[in-house]
Image (cartoon, rainbow, N blue to C red; front, side):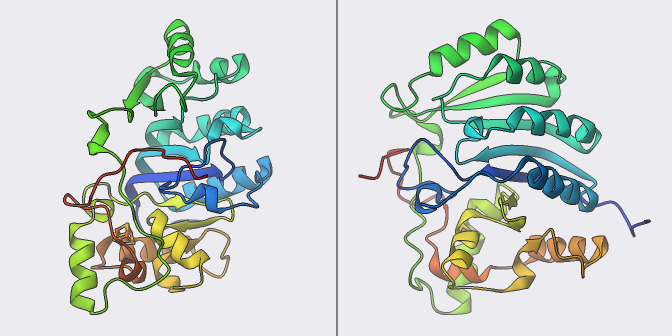
Length: 274
Ligand code: SF4
């Protein structure tokens, strides 16, 4: 089918699974609050990706994250599957929490990617949490796989630490002007081009708090998220929806959210829930 024009994005993500082996209180994907999280099937993840790349002609950076993606039993198969989509991806990245050493099979698959187009981003939350960082680094170095270690463990933590989006249960901003001001200061729409995370359900939300507000039943504005499985919408319709989100002045979820702003207080990354 011919579509009206190409559609490119700065950044998109797949939450390949919300299962995680850490329980970070301020997780931006709210993973530990999904107490019944299960791994989606390999077929479902592939179908979601296929549908995403039918809509999006090119994405500058595509991140596989979670949860902890290295816990996902079909990660190698997904990485093999994504190889065919590399003409549509600038940089493919796997974001991991430094707790799991990639298997030889996964390393072999990673090694087949061009160095400039693929990397593993390892978050280091300190030796009590990211226990395998040094071993992961060693194995990635030895196999020649591009990687970066992101410091989240001391006073030089990336971006000064994590932010607290809040528990999102009640409105923090009432007027549209206050909501738009929050949005205008938030790094998600402004500096990061949103995260546009495809969830295990095939729904794609512009940021973690927007998904969480929807999960909590606080907002349900279908013009602000994408259901990749909505066959009533054409590819062009889906593109128009995404374009509208990218060009908006706020999301309904911003009313409930502290945002990720320059002046947001910073917290110790990966503090664990009891
Ligand atoms: S809901 Fe609004 S304020 Fe909160 S992270 Fe998303 S864009 Fe930013």
